[in-house]
Length: 393
Image 1 (cartoon, rainbow, N blue to C red):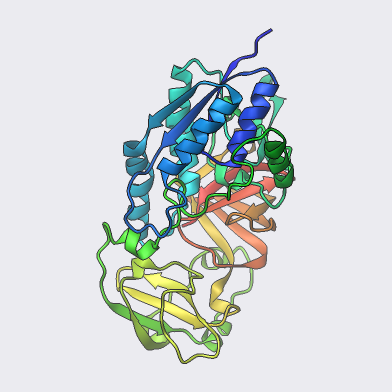
Image 2 (cartoon, rainbow, N blue to C red):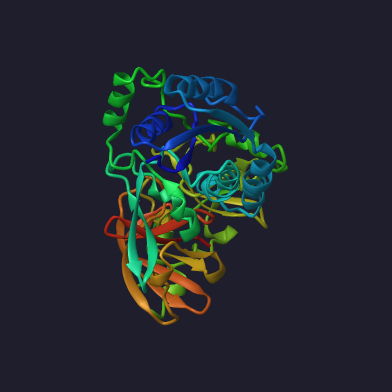
């Protein structure tokens, strides 16, 4: 019996290549589709992610596996839904995650729609994650599970998917380790077996971020102000429900909290925890970004990677930015629940607690977290299942 039709997003890399091979091996009717999402070169510092190179590899894989191959141009949508959003967020002094947005807005939305138009029952990708299904209230509930390879687990990048999207998704390599994937590619004679993994912004590649952002964001001189570690140590709060709002907010630095030590070209070009790009010398240890003030165009810095200003006990997610992959886990106002959290890709899971309020979710961690950044996504897990996520305020 012929299995259902599956569209696989062929990127020209080894992961999607092996995913396509495994699907065909299982008996699916596989169609390879390459997405053109970005064509421009402004700010690019590498040609390694150019779509023209990738599409050649993708087409060769399709020929090798003897599957149909199509190209879809989604670049206009990608600009509107991902890149324009990035510019808008940086302009507000926030640091967005384009990879999460790309999956939510492009791969598992527009691309999925195009795949359904081709008659596909499922869309498959080369992500290192897994899908599970269980019954809740007599209805199927789909689970997003971490990939078996802990070093490559990419569930975080899919933290904004919903039940409808998961129901139509397949992740063929989620049970494999990366070395196993490359070995399968070698055994099958796939040209991508030794090809390096792509890096940088999803579909854009590695870029000089300030140069990339200057396409729309104006450069403007402002002060760099150093905050001494001793000032921060005096301001630490005791964790409690009374202090939860302060503990989950960026410290409200003022110009008189420190001294001017240099100039920058625009506070919106910098992000918390950043080290490079300041070009300020004369210190024993490097300076790191502690915070930015977009209205006053000020960048606050501290000396050393362990400066207390880099660490916070908690974060806040507004109610409108909360997303539950498992809607049956959604919390009521006043409810508290323990999860494990991740605030960036490849970060080890950290224990903490969500306290739900009418305005949103307050998350307090057992251990202070370094570089909590507004605009990034926090995701929470139970065991190896990703339960929900949200945009950090």
